[in-house]
Image (cartoon, rainbow over all chains, first blue to last red; front, side, top):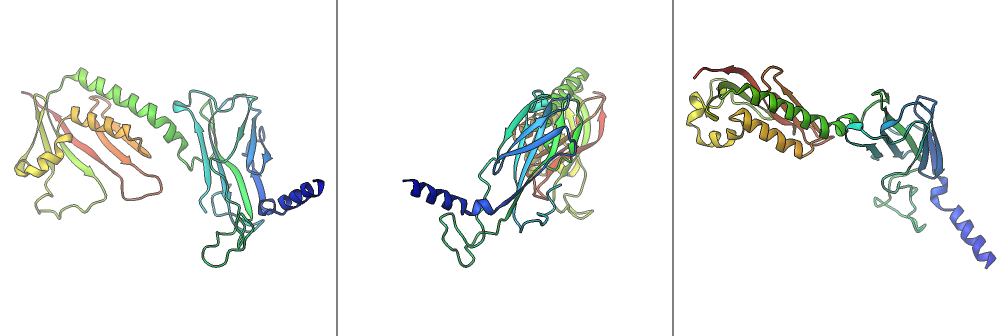
Length: 74
Length: 220
């Protein structure tokens, strides 16, 4: 049973998703922090004294690692 | 590959998305496709044009952050402000213009209508090139000069023939929630001066609307 579990873990580790590089680019204001908690899920923390009333979040996929992805990201 | 985008905001920015000193969890609206080149989800090799585009990297960014004091971080490439305010500010402006117009009690007037569209106008001097002038008497609009004899044009233009009908047209357009709507009203009388509707983002030449010039109140 244990062997099967290890096998599943090994297979999961070898899934393509794990090889995808995920970069999070926070806004210019350092009082807004962004932390990744799952492959494509983030937690945004607002440390400013103002509420955020509008927000756009973008997930851009493509390209080899360490190369710009189009002109869409900051 | 098109980005997956999440736009968040209550109409009119009246409620916070993230309160001050607060936090929020954000996930992509749909699954991010991260199938690498030449492999499918089952690990099978894909050969030929059916292979999905290579994905080695995902970048998560926040292009726009709006605060309750009206300041903004980043750019507004997704027209977040227009998208969220259009449903509150444009109807409010329409209601205010209608109230102003009603208070003026103008029922005899004249104006020139001009269509906004991506279309070729008739050459000068040819039928259809004449200015489209409406004269309104007791709430009914009448086409003037050569246009008065064109039955098909009369029917097609009827919805613009009075200011009240133009207000109804604008209301119907706002209900469609176009990608962008720009509407200018006369600051003194309230009648629509310019209506510009862009129904779809990322599509050009489909914009439409109309302009009103030469508005003149007439005596009975």
